[in-house]
Amino acid sequence: MKVFKFGGASLKTPERIRHVASIIQSHAENNLLVVVSAMGKTTDLLETLVAPAASAQAVNTALATLKKYHYDIIEALFQDTAGVYAAVNAIVADIEKEITLGDGDQRYDQVVSKGELMSSVIVHHYLLSQNLHSHWLDARTCIATDSSFREGKVDWAKTATNVQPLKAVLQKHIVITQGFVGRTPDGLTTTLGREGSDYSAAIFASSLDAASLTIWKDVAGVMNADPKRFPSPIVFEELPYKEAAEMTYYGANVIHPKTIKPLANKNIPLLVKNFDDPSLPGTRIHACTVENLPPLIVFKDHQCLISCKVTDYTFISEEQLGVIFHALSTLDIRINLMQNSAISFSFCIDFRESKVVKLIGMLQQNFEVYYNTGLTLITIKNYDAASFERYRQHPGVMLEQSSRSTLQVLVK
Ligand SMILES: Nc1ncnc2c1ncn2[C@@H]1O[C@H](COP(=O)(O)OP(=O)(O)O)[C@@H](O)[C@H]1O
Ligand SMILES: N[C@@H](CC(=O)OP(=O)(O)O)C(=O)O
Image (cartoon, rainbow, N blue to C red; front, side):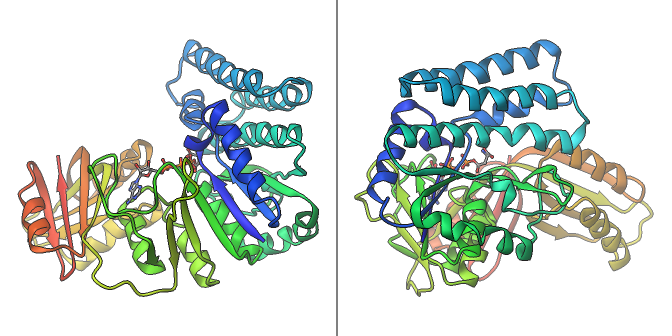
């Protein structure tokens, strides 16, 4: 069996959904499980519903936009709309109820997960209307997680057991399910982290021992730089798992960072294919060796630089580093770059406001704390002389570090 994943960009208009259906149809003879993300920017919209400072008016406006967007898609795709409206409206009713219940990360997950549910029921009904044998699956009945809301940690053993009945279903049906979502042991919904649908697809592929996972994107494949920032990057025909994993770690958002490991562990190839032109070869990520890779350039935005300075004229010590790392680990924050001097320790992390505020509060108990936000971390892996010089001279460098193969600069 094979797993396909279509992201929000591939599902944002009725035309694109028709195109998704045609891709699925042309592979229908394979036993196919299809993971879909929320349509277009739906997840961002759902986030505004649960934003801590959202006014009642902002919530109402976002709800109206959410409904209109999905209803317009339904009107454009279906002649017989009764079944799909019933399914989508049931989800809308759940959203309206759940935005009033509980608070914090738990409420976030109950509401923000609904984009994938809406998207998957629309795609499912559309495939049925095209006479395809579609089976809608609630991914939460398969992907078991702990109760870490917004970053559910997968219980792999439970998930492997949960997916077994799907093998029989896949013999006769195309299974349509959601990315991004899981379920706690108490039956609450979790999400796997923003952009986590690639990871969901890898979880299904790994748990079902798929022959391959194909992620359909709006690009020709994995490139040595983001085509939105560079005019003509090189498209890789193939990449070793390790190289792809490192790119995603540094922030290449073409693939979610957790996607590669479960696939590599089972030697399942990951194909990144172009959604607009499926005849293009795309990129095959698998166990291989590629000589002379060009420099890989990765930009990671929304970075925050925090500096902790000792206040009593002692030098920064292992004990003090222990305090800093303990705070980071308590809040489950990953460091993207770090550096120490005689009296201070500086590190760069992703800016997530609620966590950063808590972290600074904890660090201020022991240090003088300085911070900058809105920074970009640029990583050049496999740098050559030209790229090394160019990025070191980038305007606004705040921190710089290089190893034998990788240069990182944090810029304003
Ligand atoms: N190295 C890279 N190679 C290809 N695309 C990249 C790379 N780095 C970043 N991207 C960006 O990733 C985008 C696709 O990912 P994303 O928008 O998350 O897709 P989806 O929503 O379909 O999952 C592309 O449009 C491209 O701008
Ligand atoms: N919809 C979720 C999950 C996801 O992975 O989406 P996409 O495949 O469009 O990046 C998000 O936007 O975070």
